[in-house]
Amino acid sequence: HHHRAAFEAATRGFVGGKVPLGIKRKGLRIVVTGGAGFVGSHLVDRLIARGDSVIVVDNFFTGRKENVMHHFGNPNFELIRHDVVEPLLLEVDQIYHLACPASPVHYKFNPVKTIISFFLSNFPFFSLHKTNVVGTLNMLGLAKRVGARFLLTSTSEVYGDPLQHPQVETYWGNVNPIGVRSCYDEGKRTAETLTMDYHRGAQVEVRIARIFNTYGPRMCIDDGRVVSNFVAQALRKEPMTVYGDGKQTRSFQYVSDLVEGLMRLMEGEHIGPFNLGNPGEFTMLELAKVVQETIDPNAKIEFRPNTEDDPHKRKPDISRAKELLGWEPKIPLRQGLPLMVSDFRKRIFGDHSDAKP
Ligand code: NAD
Ligand code: UDP
Ligand code: UDP
Image (cartoon, rainbow, N blue to C red; front, side):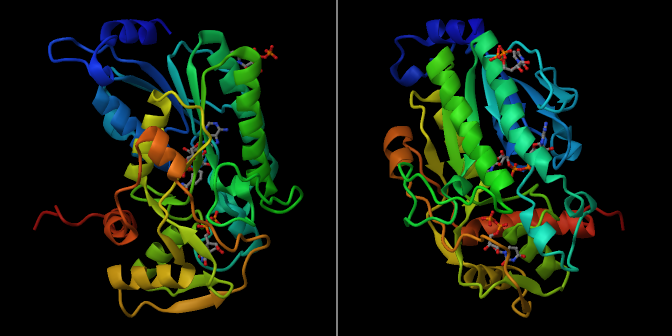
């Protein structure tokens, strides 16, 4: 709080809040819950590079120490193993609340022989809902106590199987409250409600991002999401598993675009919610084609039964973020996918590029 006030005082009057050369911007103290995960670790990289002090709070449920290990030893970096379902006392200026296991639904209902990781096939679904509800409540309580600004990473899943296309923030969604996906969808919807309650009732400064399907390096290899599945399968010379007829659509955003959007949202003056996603829409069969072009033209496709309540279409309307945050994604799928593929190649086969002869 004091840091933010000091920062604002130091930069007041300068156009665009830019600090002129010679005046040192005071770093903020920022907590990133879920900071050892895919998106969180990329966000942490940017915040550290900007000169802020970052505390990562993570229980390593789907995240990995490897994602943030390169910051070990940096005095501006701290890693706490903690489950956000338990209360937490910290003094910070900003809270990026990302903690929430990646949606594991497909595994439970498509326990196909591909690459099922242990924890997902034994996934305690109630804990997902609890993380979204109790974890978010705790982080909002923390924000209230210390006067920190709080950003929630919600999801396009709050729109459910949408009856409006593309999805605009004003759309209330079409969610099955008792379905197999509802621990995720409804959990995030409740998290949004709590966030607005703390804003209205306790004057907590809040921000809400609704994130659409995002991919990139450090993505969990085995969590069953479509981009990671196809890439890992094509690399391993296994057939790519297309669920249903493959005509359902998703819009895929590269992770650096998302991180830029999250930071602009946090620093800006608007609460949101804001859709953060890439409007480039693909059917799963088209995605499989792009993966073939990128990795292996001979990669095979295998059809599998689809999961319950699978949304038919998804594409963000990002007019609001464009107008109010000056943000739009820069990296199309065909440019971003190769960056992810080289990371997956190293993680699956090991990096032999610097092997001694
Ligand atoms: P991820 O699974 O890689 O990261 C989530 C992190 O939270 C992991 O490091 C995990 O260990 C941690 N975590 C989970 N439960 C926790 C708990 N109870 N206490 C502390 N830490 C906990 O997933 P991601 O893709 O990086 O997602 C980050 C956020 O963005 C999530 O909130 C997710 O719902 C949201 N989101 C992501 C996408 C996407 O396509 N990647 C889309 C929509 C929304
Ligand atoms: N909380 C926390 N850290 C803090 C302050 C609060 O984890 O620094 C938790 C607290 O344990 C509670 C939740 O946040 O479970 C909500 O806090 P709040 O003060 O809003 O509610 P109350 O404690 O009055 O129910
Ligand atoms: N999907 C697929 N093959 C896979 C994994 C997923 O065809 O191996 C489909 C899935 O049925 C859905 C789409 O890809 O229609 C996106 O799934 P994902 O889990 O990546 O994201 P979400 O459904 O949460 O948007």
